[in-house]
Amino acid sequence: AQTVTQSQPEMSVQEAETVTLSCTYDTSESDYYLFWYKQPPSRQMILVIRQEAYKQQNATENRFSVNFQKAAKSFSLKISDSQLGDAAMYFCAYRAFGNEKLTFGTGTRLTIIP
Amino acid sequence: EAGVTQFPSHSVIEKGQTVTLRCDPISGHDNLYWYRRVMGKEIKFLLHFVKESKQDESGMPNNRFLAERTGGTYSTLKVQPAELEDSGVYFCASSQAGTASFNYGYTFGSGTRLTVV
Image (cartoon, rainbow over all chains, first blue to last red):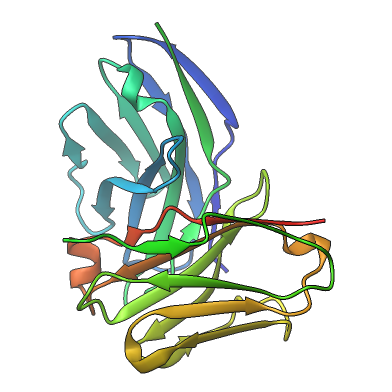
């Protein structure tokens, strides 16, 4: 069975600095998708960034980028120029190709220090 | 477009009572999912509807949980009778069919926080 591990229950970063959230996963599949979701205090989860496993190029969305290491099964999220609005729970998620189900990690609570 | 709507946002019930959670997906989304997060743990998949049919219900914890999706529109998740371990946040999500669900992502609701006392 696939598993997703987020080893950092909590992280904090100074405003305008850069922070990296870790995520590792375990799968025997060769084709899959990886996601980072953000859940602000208002509780609606929002998709931050996504990556297709067959693409070697790391996905980037404005201040958010990933470091995807397929061999190491690692999928970390880098947030540059952190802003107060980035404070949230961040969940890493996996989805096998052809399967609609998401497998989530336990989340990382990110605090932004003004 | 309207997002995924869930209600109630909070529910506090006594052990042994019944609670029904409702989810209204985005119009036109065939896929509807229920997930649950127990405090401090990962978000776990409960089940997946394609239109009105249950595609995958492998995550449903036991027969106290009953999910329905009337006419392929809104969905309800009933817990009867509720137990203490059912407490958590129940999320609903919807997506378009097939690979579009990757391209457009899932859209989640704000969740229902269920507390069983």
